[in-house]
Amino acid sequence: MKHRVCHFVVSVICFATAVCTASAPPYISALNSWIDVENNVARNRLLSNISPAGASAGAVAAATSRSNPDYWYHWVRDAGIALCEVSIWLNATSTTDDNPATADMLNKKLKEYAEFSRYLQITSSSSAYGLGTAKYQMDGSPFTGPWCMPQQDGPAMRAVSLIGYVRYLLANGKDVSIYYDSKQPTTSIVKTDLDYIAVNWDADNNNCDIWEEVRGTHFYTYMIRRRALIEGAQLATLLGDSAAANWYSLQSEYISQNMSAAFWDAKLGHIRTTANQTGGLDYKISNLDTQVLLAALHSGLDDGFYTVESDRMLMTVVRLVSAFKPLYGINGVSFATVNSAIMPVSLALGRYPEDKYDGYNSSGPGNPWSLVTSGMAEYHYRLVDTWNRREAITVTSAVAGFLKQLTDEYSIHFRNQYIVDTTYNSSSAIFIEILYNVMVVGDMYMARVAFHTDSGGQMYEEWNLDTGFGQGAVNLTWSYGAHTSAARHREAARCIVYSC
Ligand SMILES: *[C@@H]1O[C@H](CO)[C@@H](O)[C@H](O)[C@H]1NC(C)=O
Ligand SMILES: *[C@@H]1O[C@H](CO)[C@@H](O)[C@H](O)[C@H]1NC(C)=O
Ligand SMILES: *[C@@H]1O[C@H](CO)[C@@H](O)[C@H](O)[C@H]1NC(C)=O
Ligand SMILES: *[C@@H]1O[C@H](CO)[C@@H](O)[C@H](O)[C@H]1NC(C)=O
Ligand SMILES: *[C@@H]1O[C@H](CO)[C@@H](O)[C@H](O)[C@H]1NC(C)=O
Ligand SMILES: CC(=O)N[C@H]1CO[C@H](CO)[C@@H](O)[C@@H]1O
Image 1: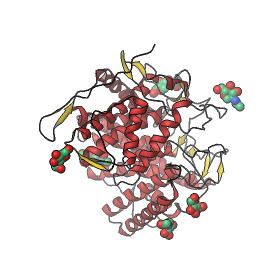
Image 2 (image 1 turned 135 degrees about the vertical axis):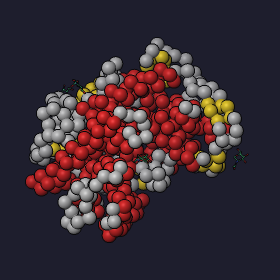
Image 3 (image 1 turned 180 degrees about the vertical axis):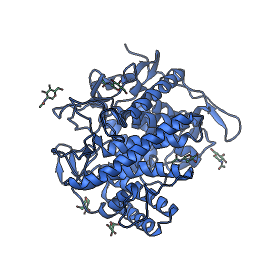
Image 4 (image 1 turned 90 degrees about the horizontal axis):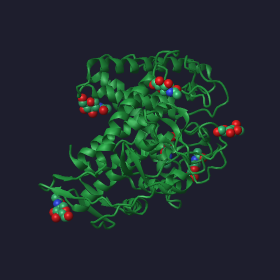
């Protein structure tokens, strides 16, 4: 069935110069209630993959799928991404009316994960790749089969997740010395990872990317190590370890400097995902990959360094959206029924255009991924939040290119004009309209995820490119974490655009 493309009229009411509200599109309550329900399912299933029955306490299953494909492993990166979410939930219990039992349960998950992670650091000495070991058995022994290793994003993501937890403990007056000591050599989990990153970030130009397919130096891996060292320096300062703080800080500056020339390709007009490929897949020729987008979400620090609103990131996002459009049959649909309401849906996005992994093997074609499409929803919500906090939008040519794509791909028409090289403050009509339209498109990505998620809320790694049904690993922990993170950022954006 074909639906007429309708343009939602933006009606903006301004009470005073700074207080403006726009009316939400008619389908919003159906989408809101889908998100409320899914957020709960996703949160519970993510939590149930931490310390699951039959595994060591603190081990995190990448998915419940144990065969075709077998994801019953503790991947250091995937686990870190999940526990970052848990540490944010735990921290939020101090300001919400969550039951104290909820805080205890979340605290227990984090504590077990921290202890298990320390055990992995010690057992990793039996692996040829040390802390660069990508994954472990669910009993904590290193995976020794053939695999693309080392992977240097894991220790950094683990440090970021546990720094979040340690900050929470400190704010609540707890002793954190088992997680961070100032000893040299250290015996604590967080400092072991930080020292490793600070020493090794420039030592290995042959490590594997987050998809475990390409060797070289990778944008995502640099970005997450940079975040770990910046936040690690802040924590070390807080705990009186000033020599370490200075060292982490200096290394993070070197990373930033080394990154500025290595990854941006002005000729291609996008960030290259791998700066110097040394091995692995030979068919990934575009060097265009949504892991760059994920890096902005996982590692962006609101300092303008490859953050969501940066020109380079916006230009990369535009290229990504265009690249995936023709690849998947399901992208022929631009409206779908979600929770009994018809709503516009975005394109579905995958990992990179040349992908051949279909969730089982690499005989391809590749499929769109749930966590990537959720990530693009989050990207839009974070843009709304960032521009709102800046109280102005400077329409660079990159911003204009991004807005033009909203029109070209998603039939979003701007009633107010925007002119390149002009800054619009928060009381201008175009500022409000941009925030509104970016919110609407963020919700289109959310609606796309909703459309392909099982009615009981169960997620997979991928959606079949032609049928749209879940494919590959079932109950992928990362798919749930990407949803809960997007839903949280949506709340902030929704309150800005529609008031709440
Ligand atoms: C997905 O996880 C839930 C528990 O979180 C479990 O009940 C269900 O059986 C899992 N699905 C599959 C197909 O493994
Ligand atoms: C933790 O919660 C406090 C409020 O209780 C908030 O100020 C702080 O920003 C939160 N930290 C994180 C990392 O979310
Ligand atoms: C890159 O990092 C190294 C330290 O590993 C530093 O000596 C060098 O100055 C940095 N390069 C650039 C271009 O900043
Ligand atoms: C890959 O998986 C598909 C099922 O999705 C199967 O038909 C095919 O035989 C598999 N190929 C290899 C090389 O294992
Ligand atoms: C904001 O922009 C409007 C024009 O769109 C202008 O009239 C107003 O003076 C500006 N306000 C500030 C505080 O700069
Ligand atoms: C370590 C290494 O090989 N670095 C190179 C990566 O690629 C950039 C640009 O393509 C070079 O300038 C670096 O020397």
